Length: 555
Ligand SMILES: Cc1cc2nc3c(=O)[nH]c(=O)nc-3n(C[C@H](O)[C@H](O)[C@H](O)COP(=O)(O)OP(=O)(O)OC[C@H]3O[C@@H](n4cnc5c(N)ncnc54)[C@H](O)[C@@H]3O)c2cc1C
Image (cartoon, rainbow, N blue to C red; front, side, top):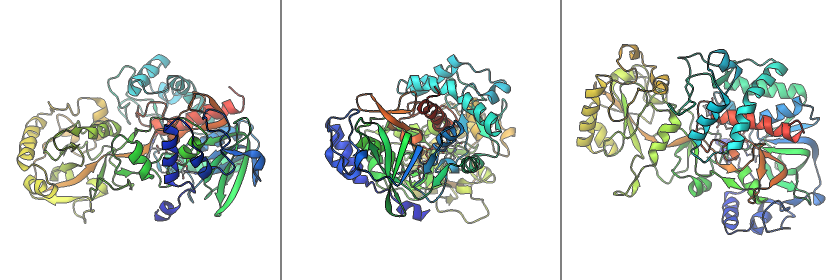
């Protein structure tokens, strides 16, 4: 994957920040236009007026109807386009690998009112789903887009089933992940999590095969570098790079941006994220290219401070280091949440319900200490005991094998305190207090294990069924294992602001004609919050469906 890291877009990180600063002063600057779009600079007022390249000056290397930029969730846009009659559909992908983060994911879609969920008794309603999403978003989401999402998610599932024979399924009550914000109004314990038969990797393989079979062209190692507008402001194509050379692609119907988040653009992370990101499992080609291309033509950005939170182990804590790409360290919950483990801060104190969903727990890292003038809970430390360890250790380690670099083994809590610089007396006191109630199956401090969502994520332990509370057991038996625990993500989720049709909006809330955006390069419709498993792939796929149907005049 090291090669991918060096495979940067022709858009430099500095260009993006220059653009942000200029746009922040109220004008979309000529500097970024010059940097990103040759032949640009016609209008410095923002809005829908043309600011990218003038199409008249472009020598096109290829002409298509629908151009999709990025092969993650935007692959759905290509499928919907071709499946609904668009003649020439092209997907360009910056990486050598198809599928982006989506192709490495579980592929789950969070779909209210899914036929698969209703079939297993989810009993969902539009009103309940909307109420739940609004509560999760806490006034930051795009309500019209939420409504469109709820109204179209199941239609996408049924369309893939009926057109291509795809099989989807939802867990029955008691199985699978729950919605993450229990007990918000409209919460569902099952049914909104919809899985592709065979999982995420199979889903993206099937997408690729389906597209190829339909005659959709896929160009890997072809990063888009700028959007091209005509004299009316409509996007008519992109400038790209192919085999290291300029490659201009005209798109007569629309361009769909699906370039992912900006996890691996350290300057953007530092400039926009509200709490640091230390680890991300988003692919390394996600460097905010779509954000920069959109901003260069006056697109509005929103939600830039949020991400799909995913706590992670890390071997060395460097507050200034860029996000590390790692697939083994992120903790979806099975480690943090297992009985016989806790997470403490450097004061030796627990600070959250370890069994809460990953994106919920990640928010607890944001507590700032006015005494030390640093984040109180970052870095935190994961600690488990030897009874826990038999079921597996962080990083996929096993007790009898060599431990990975993230893990520290100790005979006592005192050794852990010394190794990680934790207040030793406070740690002993905290663990003693925790153990006394954990023995009885209670967690008076954070109510761990009281919600069904807690138990769904963490109750994997071999002896969980013997416990009064399946995710609570004392941390008592040496040897102990410990690791640094930090905020992370599986993707930033702020970006281009879109309307309920996935159309990109200007800073004046006007539609930029023919430009659509989906996935993590957009401002998440749920205000950056993870409503339940599949929220991120779900939103990318469903907004692809909605957007392309709009572009084709089908809605
Ligand atoms: C192990 C794992 C499991 C996960 N499981 C789930 C799950 O089950 N459900 C869920 O909802 N979420 C899940 N997630 C999170 C989810 O995968 C991501 O948030 C989501 O896939 C992001 O989709 P995207 O389309 O925005 O970005 P990506 O899928 O990363 O796609 C963006 C693509 O754009 C390409 N690109 C970037 N710049 C350019 C450019 N200039 N030109 C052309 N191409 C460009 C990138 O190379 C990349 O391929 C998981 C993540 C991981 C790592």
